[in-house]
Amino acid sequence: MFLSGRARMSVLALTAALGPLACSGTPAGPDIAVEHAWARPVAAPASAAGGGWNSAVYVQMVNRGRTADRLMAASSEAAAAVEIHESRVEDGVMRMRPVAGVALAAGERVTLEPGGLHIMLVGVTRSLAVGDTIAVTLSFEQSAPLAIRVPVEQR
Amino acid sequence: MTWRTVLGLLVAAVIVTIGSAVWLLGRRPVQSFGSETTVLSPPMPAADFALESADGPVMLRDLRGRHVVLFFGYTFCPDVCPLTMQRLDRALDLLGEDADRVQVVMITVDPERDTASRMRQYVSQFDPSFLGLSGTEEAVHRVATDYGIFHAKVEREDGGPYTMDHTATVLVLTDTGALVLLWPHGMEAETMAADLHTLLGG
Amino acid sequence: MKRIVIAGSAVAVGLVTLLPAGFALLRPVTVLPRIELAPGYDLVDQNGRRFTSEDARGTITLYSFAYTGCPMPCDAVFDVMRGVQAALDTVDTGGLAVRLVTIGIDHRRDSPGALTELAARWGANPALWTFASGDSVRLLRTVRNGFGVFYEGMPDSTYRFSPAFILVDGVGIVRGDYRIGVPRAEDLVDGIARIAREARAEGVAHVMYEAAHFFACYSE
Image (cartoon, rainbow over all chains, first blue to last red; front, side):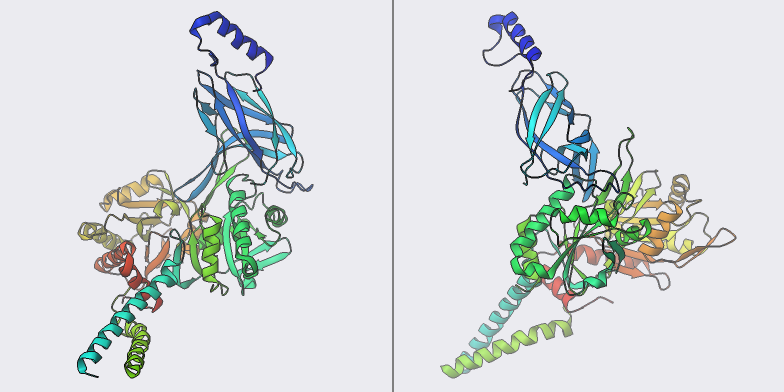
């Protein structure tokens, strides 16, 4: 788990304050863990006709805490911009739209996977080859930002 | 041999015939394809098109001799389009040597951003044999209309880069350029490979 | 015994060859031909909402073409469409949706408001009969290039055009193209019923319909 120091401290303080009321092992606030992250490889040729090249990051997020949280945004050194998008095929039509965030109810696991929710890398700064690792930071409404290392994988 | 025997044989023959005819017709061309596949038998004439590849102009008739798997997408799309491409690549792998008789073609619905060379760069990431096509806005609109592909640019309120809505159907044309199969979005590579195998006379 | 087997096999082989020939000649089942793919389009309906070829997919759709203030031959077109709309109650489509669409070819005058008026004037049931139009480029691509229906603006702001009725199945394939004279509503309704019957057929019946396509047993 990658909770930043301050978040960890506040959780500890809160737990201590609530004392016996707090169920042991379950933090009072949200507690987000990220698992099975991977990024789609993309060759980004130098010529920029039509703009940069895009890729996507997929993760599983588990909120092990007792209150809801929300993935609000993401950033990465590997892309000019990072957005949260959802792809959907409705009545035979492929659509992709930016979404305002991903809700993480207490105790819930949310999977970002191909053909649905994904973290879109808009304009990658370099080619992403299988075996590479990129740094991605996920920002939440409640929890402190999580910095994760995401392997580039062919899946 | 009594007339009874002859009659019995005739009845048996009729039953066998009707049974096998139904079975044969049932197998080909109707049931040997995936349950989600729409089969057009006989294949239906398809409109020719005139588009651009990175190596110059391409018309549908230039691809005669190979079955054509045609789908529409755009390179800005980092999620669903690569998924389709990967599945098609895997389907060709499953076909083995027969893959040489199939040409996968991706036509952009976003000619504003997707040049012919960009299309080649995009498709060759998945399989160097794939053909990526673009063209003038008019030419792309023409082919999409002819193939029943709805597509529309979707501008964003926040001023971010636009996306495209488009029909996700994959079309399969025979080696003589006639439309024979329609695949809905989300077909598995195994089903696509099995359909192509049947189509190629396996 | 051996002779019986040989005779039996001969009869069987004979029947196997004769059956398809019999099918082709006797035409026990007929179908509407699969003519071509219906065009993909992106228009706006009488409520100002986007109306696309994907909205029509999955329903049997009858297209016709007209424009606001059209003196001739639109009245005849609307009469037929109204006749079809009235007769749809009598058709058992087995739950398959049917939609009527009239595309307004005049990009200047066929605004959603004008189309609403047109729909009301001809008694269109909005749940069944959609009126749609678009800008000049979209109309040209959809109507002239897509459906192959010729139209041309005249100096007196009328249009020269050949009326056409085009019947499209749920898959998005043109199954009927009526453009010589004005067809009878009964014939269009019959076409709709045939498409519905074929779409619902399963098992052996489905095989028979496919065989009818295969042997080109097309209904008149």
